[in-house]
Amino acid sequence: MRISANPLRGQQFPAVLLLVAAGLGLLAANIPAHDALAAVLDFHIAVPGTSLDLSISHWVSDGLLAVFFLVVAIELRHELTHGELDSPRKAVQPAIAAAGGVLVPIAVYLLIAGDPATVTGWPIPTATDIAFALGVLAMFGRGLPSTVRVFLLALAILDDIIGIVFIAVLFAHDVQWLLLALAVVAVAVFWLLSRVLHAQGHPAVAVAMVLVGVVAWGLVASSGIHATIAGVLLGLVMSPVPAARARHALEPAVNGVILPVFAFVAAFVVIPDLALSELSPAFWGIVVALPVGKIVGISVFGWLAMRIRPRGAAPALPFGDILAAGALGGIGFTVSLLLANLAFASDDGIRDQAILGVLVGSLLALVLSAVIVSLRARSYRRLGAATS
Image 1 (cartoon, rainbow, N blue to C red):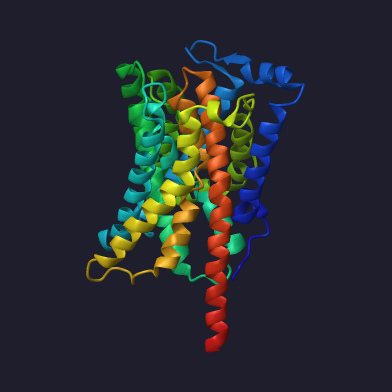
Image 2 (image 1 turned 180 degrees about the vertical axis):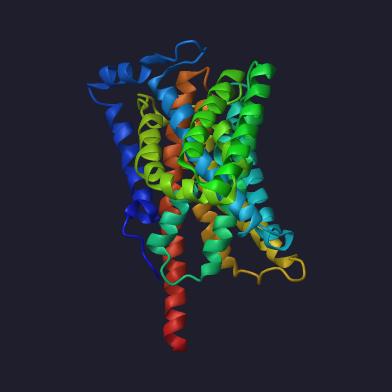
C-alpha cells in the first residue's frame, strides 16, 4: 500500500491536530490573556462596497470553513456517482443506519433539553466528523476488515448531507432572493468554467473560477443563507477532473490550517463557574446524545438494515462491527461545533455551554470508540492468528 509522505493527507495526524487545536482554544479562553484574544477574534473586517462586515471569528466560520465544505462536496459527489453510494443497493444499509444516527440523538436531546430556551439545539448531535472518525479508526482499528471503513465512510457522508440540509434550511434568515438568484447565476458560470477547464486546462480559466467562486460566496453570505452553502454548491457542480485536482491541492490546507483554526476559534469559550446541576440542559443533551444517542441509533438501525437488506446488497456486517461504527459516529466535532454556533447565535451563554457539550460529548465518543474499535480489532487479529 502506498503511503503519502505528507501527513496532512493522512487520517491520523489531522485528527490529532484538530484535537490539539480545540484544546488550545479552550485553554486560551480561560487564561488571564482571554480579553486580549477575545478582542482580536471580535475585530471586524468589512469588504468595501458590500454589506459584508464580519468579525475575525465569523470570517473563519463563514469564509475559511466554506473551503472545507467545498472539499466535502467534492467528496460527496464522487461517492454519490462513483463511490460507496453510487447505487441504491450500496446506499440502503448505511442510509438506514444514518437515519438512526440522526433520529435517536435528536430524541435523546429533546428528552433532556426540549424546553423552549434550548430546543433549537436539536440538530447539534446529529453530525459525524469524517476526518476524526476515520482518524480514530486508522489509529486503533488495525486488523479490522475494510468493510467497516466503507460502512463508516458511507454513514458519515450521509450525515454530512443531512447536516448541510440543516444548515441551509434551518439557519437561513431574512433571505434576499435577488442576491440568492445572482448567486445561482454565479454558480452556473462556475460550472461552465469548470467544463472549459476540463477541456482546455488553461490557467486563466482556473483563475476565473476562483474569482467567480469568491463572488458566489459573497452573494450567498449576503443573501441570508449561511455562507458555507456556497462551498457546497460550488463543489457539487465542479467538473470531475478539475474537482479532483482542487481537492488534492486543498486537502493539506484544509487539514493543516482551516480545520485547526476553526477548531481553535470555535472552542474559544470560557468554562462557566457553575455547579454541574446549574449547567444548561443544552450541555447535558449534547453530552448524552453524541456518544449514547449515536451508538444506540446507528447500532440498532444498522442491525435492522442488515436483516432486511435487498438482494444483491453488500454482505451483512457483524453486529460488533456496526457497534464500532456507531461509536465512531458519535464524534461530532467540526459540523456539530458549527451547528452549536448557529443554533444559539442569539444567546452567548447557552451557545458556549453547547460548544462545551460538543467538545465533551465528542471526547467521550472518541474514548468509547477507541476502546470498542481496539477490542474489535484485537478479536480479528486473534481470529486471523488462530486460522493461519
